[in-house]
Length: 255
Image 1 (cartoon, one colour):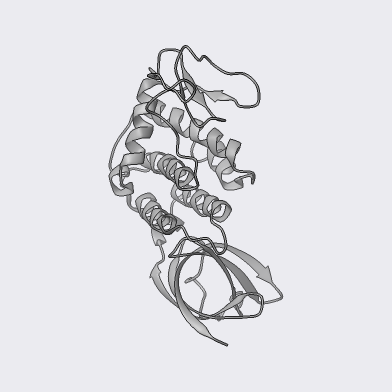
Image 2 (tube, rainbow, N blue to C red):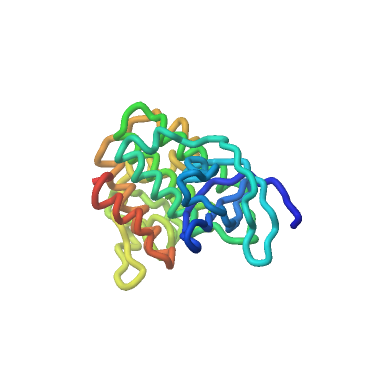
């Protein structure tokens, strides 16, 4: 079988037969690849510990009829710190779950892999665990922007006038942007979320900033919660698949 190298982030494991696993991988070019890790469920497997969700590895893949087959794996970044802290671990599970839903087979989006690795590193290494919530909010915002849903924050998405966030306007989930007070709060399936001026500033800053910077910056807890709730609703509105890890995080570690 033809073989080729691939650097990838492990997103998900699925049982196959008695001892094998199918791994869902985010390749370095941002596309989804599915490959079989033969015997990985055996205690003596040479892949054990190297190919867990959240791990980055250099792989050698053999081309199969239906799925690729992993013949070798060398660890690049295991992100070990994500496995020893509950909030960091649950936040990392949201990252890999969202990527599994938005990345596509055969469709490259190179920025996704960089975002994923930078986010996991930021979650792992930020000194204060309360900043994990900020990092995860930024990841959701950036991932949606890369998926084609970049929020419009500078002017009213309805009339293009100054949105004047914080003076009676809001954020339209359907239109994907802020609303000025004159356009009001829409009703119906489009939905709207409240967005303060400070929250608007924070979202804009996140879009412009690198993950390492976000992981070192403190924002008021109330503003972080406001932005997280808004972006969570935005994700839920525009992604057809339910993000179970996000629901679990919001109900537990992130609350």
